[in-house]
Length: 85
Ligand SMILES: [Zn+2]
Image (cartoon, rainbow, N blue to C red; front, side):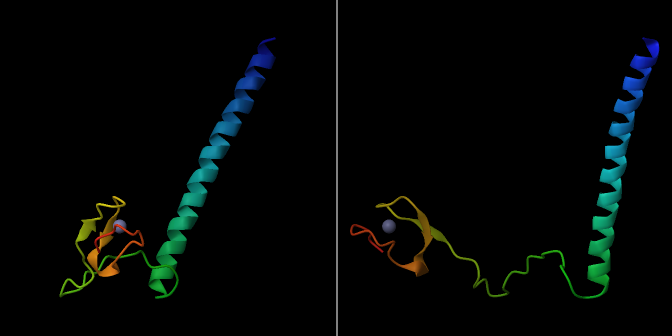
């Protein structure tokens, strides 16, 4: 009886620590891959936001009273008849 309980606890502990170990190893591999890609200059660089110096990429959005969506004024009409843009 006692050996059954001990065996169950041992199996649960083995699965628990096995998953923890697997997660740690895969996280280390992912970090190493990213570091290697950045070092080699290719691959997936982490995305960096670089705003335009003149602010051309930044637009104010206006709310259309007909369809209640927020759109850039440069986009023009949303296609509905009562759209004022
Ligand atoms: Zn509209």
